[in-house]
Image (tube, rainbow, N blue to C red; front, top):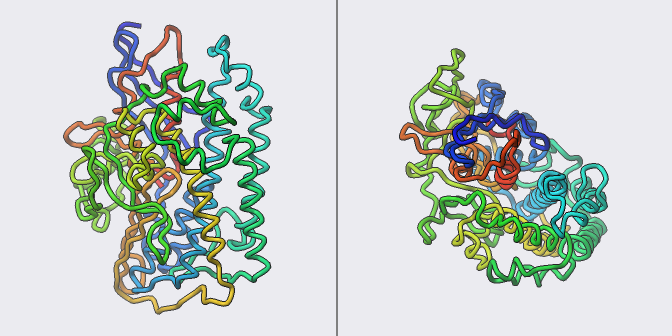
Length: 477
């Protein structure tokens, strides 16, 4: 396979449809085109509707991260209304959102990412038998335990969100339900139970010990729990060098609360932290089956190119910040928040090990955040404020889904939605090339991946793709 072309996809264990077109030279990926082949049109569905309909419709973009969409829609509406949530409403909305994000991370690790290491190709590695026992699809003892722990944690959503997915609990002014003192105790009990699972199964040690890891070398020395099993595999397969990134990271800031974000907002580039220059966001459509010129989402449009011109290859637009593609997700959040382990992982290339290691780090750190949020619940306080919806107005909703930076841009005219534009995390990470032929983060990360002879679905490509945890239904909404 000295020079060849290979189409990988559709991928299993991925939400939505995904194809990766590879140019292979001398047994390695020389170039990649990432195709999101499903156009859905949610942004067009919203046009002309009552602005409140966004709270019902946008969560249905995705059944995995629907609360993220709900939180972004509530923030966008609140911006147009000039309304902020009450402090307790903001705290509870953050807790509801954090529960979903942690559950997403857990699902990704146990059900989406780790089963690839149970494949026969890895037979003979010292860790392979243990992976088979813990992570074999539909059979692994680790996967079963994770699903049970996830269900237990989601009792919090049953209490405060009413249901999951597609809750209407998060509103521009806060949350729809005031918890009782007894429900506060039940939330704390659910979090204690979840911590027991994390410390028994996932980390095999106190969370604080994992959080205190300072450098990549210390991470690779971690032996305990399912995290240790992954790290032994990662070390032997050199996942730190696989799928390395460009070192440009974006976070809109996770879990806004009265005292500030749970994880900081910012941009990390060239080893330096800066604020997010929101006015420099542009969506390029030169290689997307979309019509129009590059535009900021507040003035953008979603007009599908029904002729599907030959120069394009995806329904996904190419968002850029200050003209640059940006990687987002758990690694980006932890780098921007300043955690030393995450910054060392990024400095050493930010590859598959870094993305998955940062996701594990974030599970541990978010557990501590959730415990603080739950301790802060005051059942005697106000959890909702109200305001009138204006006939004209604009609002922006910026949140952090599990997979990264999610933005909603809303414009209201005559009391109706005149424009609603969304950039999802996988839109950033899985974007096609732009007008300068600069690849998106995944396309760039795939270059150099080794392809073994006779591989039709190369394991290296699967590891790199899954390290970004794609949600393709969100990608093109």
